Image (cartoon, rainbow, N blue to C red):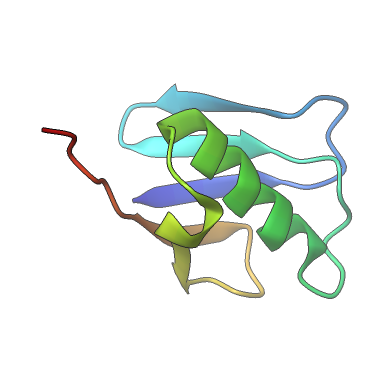
Length: 74
């Protein structure tokens, strides 16, 4: 999924704007902190473990691609 990350935001959260998901993180874009917080927020939003969210592309960019693994319950 395409994600636009806004570091140093006043609030944490997720907004869906068309085909782009916008994630607001409080962390600065240093040493992967914003990426890790975005991963945590996406995991909470989709109700999966943090290990189920993986950064695929965009390590050093605001525009990223995350992969979210869904586990269907019986």
